[in-house]
Amino acid sequence: MTLFVNLFLFLPLRAEEESKPLLRVFPIYRPEECDWAIRWDICLACMRMGERYAQKIYFPTEGGPIRVHGCFTNQKGFTEWQKEYEERYR
Picture 1 (cartoon, rainbow, N blue to C red):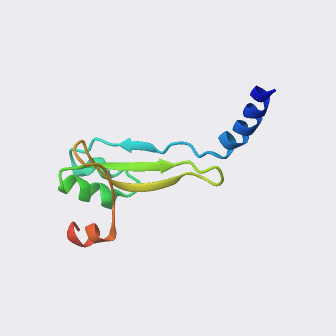
Picture 2: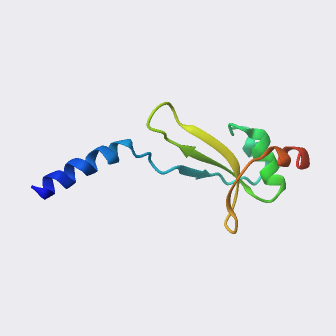
């Protein structure tokens, strides 16, 4: 009986839970390789800083995916692109 109650309480929580975000990191070595990027301007800026263009994609329970654009290095990990970078690296 307690197993059934515990299972019953656990299942609704799992349904409401969001999935983990997906991190996509792209190798960029030349400016031409940024032509395909959704945010090619961020891709070029990351390349100038010696970093790689990356997207963190969230999959909420309702609606479509949400993409956050930024740069990636092995040392710092993913860094979200912010307005202050736009002024500095354009």
